[in-house]
Length: 124
Image (cartoon, rainbow, N blue to C red; front, side, top):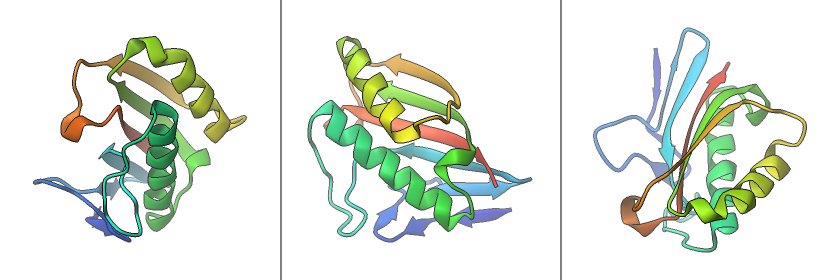
């Protein structure tokens, strides 16, 4: 098992790994919109936050020896179900032809006041 605790300035903010690689699978913990160069929070529109989170997930997957095209399962947490179409549009632009299994959950509040959190499982 390989544990990834940091990629650029992205790191876990508690007692968990940023990502874990085991048996040819990569489990990426829930990610928020952080700037990977500075580690600072990047608040923005739903679309801006999703783009940043997906970019960061791709960075983490590359560090683990994978890529966004090997993502098997995605769980998206959003704070506003009325933004579903916007979420789906931004998400589909990122993945293009690749269509991993996906769940979207709307929650009243996300950590730090972010609009979106995403976790993934990918193949190596």
